[in-house]
Image 1 (cartoon, helix red, strand yellow):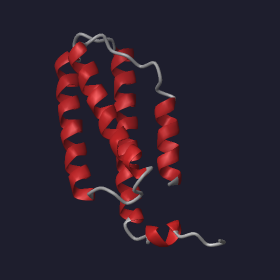
Image 2 (tube, one colour):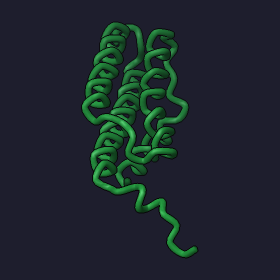
Image 3 (cartoon, one colour):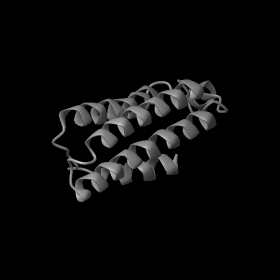
Length: 119
């Protein structure tokens, strides 16, 4: 959980990174949605999800994003490319930390944690 928190803080430091390329911005928004979906789900069901599905989806997100970055690499500045790669690395870090969290969360008996103790 600490790693996930740290990765979210890293992403927060990337606020304001933007690229003029519409295709890349659309893909980055999809990547961001991919990150947010499990976090929102876990607020209701802490161990929901499938690790292997998340790993496959992460690989697909990385592949598609990298393809777009490679396609526009010669038309963006070096600073812009560095910022975009930093953002992608932050997304990947959160995704990996989320997968690790899910692995750990599967071992917890959440029903026991939800039981009222001092009634």
